[in-house]
Length: 342
Figure 1 (cartoon, one colour):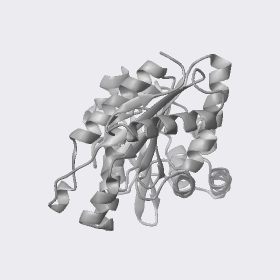
Figure 2: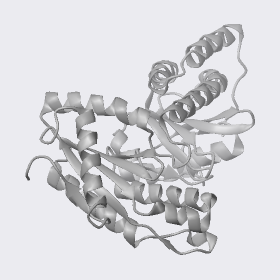
Figure 3: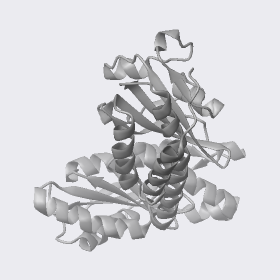
C-alpha cells in the first residue's frame, strides 16, 4: 500500500472545485454523472465503481459501474470487509494495490461475473460523520502517480458529503411516496404512476394490469389480538406481497387492510395467474409466529387490465375494486375479473 503525497496550493484549489461540483447535486443520477466526468478525467482507468454501504448490514452494493455491464453487478453485494473495497470500508483508509496478486484481500468475485481481469486497484473510503457511507474503487488505472492519488483521496471527502446528501434526499422522497407502516408505495405514488403507465401503454401497445385485494375479516384479527398485532400482521402481509412481485411490478398500501399490485406489461390472463398466486401465498402463510401466535389471513382479489377493461387509469382501479367486492359478496378468498371477456 502506497503513501499519498501532500497537496500543493493548486491541488487544493482543484479539490475545492471538485467539492463544489459534487456537493451541488442532491439527485442521485445527476451526482453520478458528475462523479463519472470528474473522476474519469482525474484518473483514467479501465473502469471504476462507486459502492454504497448498507448501514443495516455493512454490505456494499454497486451503485454505478463504469466500463462494466451494469446488469452483471446490479444484484451483487459484497460482505462486510469482503475484498479490497470491503477492507477499505472497514479501515476507513485508502488502499493502493499495484498488483492484486500480492494482496491477501483481493476477491475475484467481480472478475468471474464480468470477465474482467483486475491487475491493480485504487480504493478510497467515503466517510461521513465517522461512518463509511461508500467506497470509490478505480480498477486498472493508467498510472499510480502519488500526486493524482492524493488529489483523488482529498476529493473523496467531498464525495462522501455528496453521497450522504443524495441518500438523505432519497429517503425524503421515499417518505413522500411510501406507506410508513408497510414500506409499500402509497396512493400518491399509485395515482401518479398510473397516468405514466397509461401513456406508455398507449404509445407502445403493451398492456398493464392491477390487482386490488382486501383482507377478509381482518377486523377479527385486530379485535382478538389488538391493534399492535394487527399492525404487525399488515407488515407481514405486505412482505408476502413483495415476495410475489418482481420488478417492475410493485405493491401499494391502499389504506387499512386494502392493497394494490401494479403489474406493468402484464395482460389479463397473466394478472389473473399472479392474483391467484398472491391469494394462495397469503392463505398459506401463518402470521404473528414471532409473537407466539398463529394467525391465518385470506384475501378477496379483483383484477382489471388496461386498455381492454377500462379507458382510464381511475376507471381501471375502480373496475378492479368492483371485481374485488364481487368476490366479497360471494364467499371471499377468491380471484375475479369483470370487464371484457378473456
